[in-house]
Image 1 (tube, protein in one colour):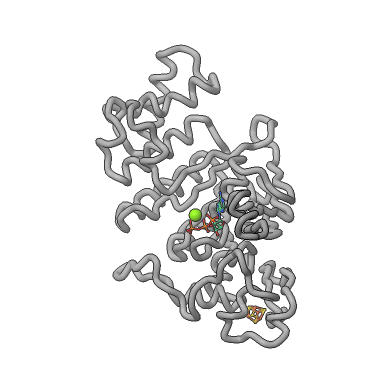
Image 2 (cartoon, rainbow, N blue to C red; image 1 turned 135 degrees about the horizontal axis):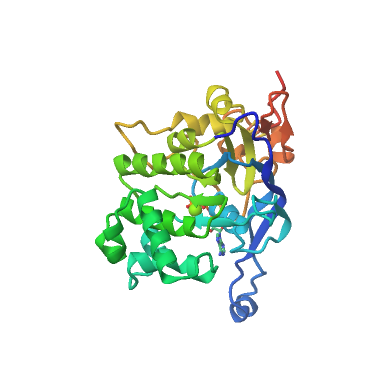
Length: 325
Ligand SMILES: Nc1ncnc2c1ncn2[C@@H]1O[C@H](COP(=O)(O)OP(=O)(O)OP(=O)(O)O)[C@@H](O)[C@H]1O
Ligand code: SF4
Ligand SMILES: [Mg+2]
């Protein structure tokens, strides 16, 4: 968590754009006279993440959260804009490790857990001798709440929550200072979810980690983050301090999201929002792309894209109707 002493920026994202070419194959286009088609998954977004802090990105399915995660970790090249990491403790620029939603898919099923965790140690030459590698693997297993003997097992012998602990241990093996977590607990039961989230919070404090955290679950995000960025169809529509955003959501979309927070007793994850479905990103609505669902939309909203503006309390909002009052 951030304190006033930790205001060094770890990551600056400036005007980030990612466009995918989703055209039909060439022959189909010629025969069916179809034009090329592009999908703007991330549309000119900017944000910073303070060192030691956690910025969460929330929004409905398809709004571009995972694309941002993949851009930040270098799995995708940006179409436009810049991603800049500040120097880390070693003086070299930080790099981000990613934790995925489905730990099973990201762990080699044929390897023993100790080898999965040792791989980054060997590859990055962080430990030299076999004894040093074994010692570090055991330390990492204990750090994430597993036992030393778990290192001998294979990924299929673990529960979902334990598997996510293994992927956290593997991510920590490369001694990252920055972790990008893409829905790390969405596939887990609620009780296990809380344990893994608490582990991640503890690791953040103990190791001084910086998180870019992605989720569509507002209650998870509230637990984890200092600041929250709300995305809608590839854009950030509101970004601000967690408590402020929950107490005084300014954008009509954030207000709708907060109305549908699942409660602990009824953890309905993919509850549909009031106001209909998300429009296709292939044909985004004109002006403010939220206007077909917005209860407050005016004529101006379908004609003019609202710029994101910073209010005096530090919140940034992209809505024609929001004033700094
Ligand atoms: N590799 C790709 N090629 C083409 N289109 C893509 C690709 N990756 C993502 N998209 C599209 O970009 C948009 C944003 O996708 P993204 O996966 O970033 O959304 P998301 O917010 O992570 O959604 P979810 O909550 O379902 O994980 C979607 O319309 C998606 O179909
Ligand atoms: S700009 Fe208009 S349509 Fe968009 S959120 Fe604000 S009021 Fe609603
Ligand atoms: Mg995603």
